[in-house]
Image 1: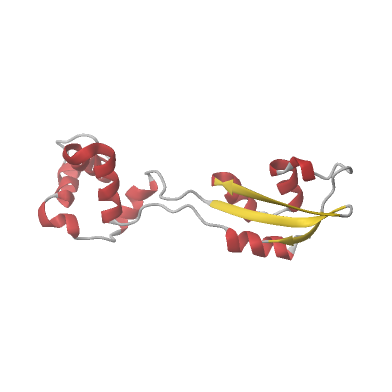
Image 2 (image 1 turned 120 degrees about the vertical axis):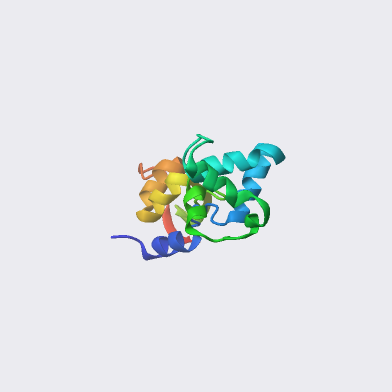
Length: 152
């Protein structure tokens, strides 16, 4: 049986991976990464899915970054597709603070999980996994058991 407080806290504190989804975010990324002269060709290659600058796909893609077209089509689905293949703006993460009793002492710990570890934890939140993997001093080996009284 899952602890309702842990499940609730995990879902409230979880921040999913966020990718670039708009044309302006992608333009800023390419300008910062490749500089003022080379960014358009790199952006066009990623949009077209080819590095062949003579292909019709590349020629069509490069036009998206020329003249007044640079400000048009800000939220087209193709930008989301390109953004999924670039580094995320923010990687998924979750920070939890667990409090409890260990004998007569009140103890607490805060841990942050990122990336696939955060995704997996939110899909199946479990105190024992959290203790064993991320805070081993509170593992359930009999000598350092923590009776959880709260999670946030």
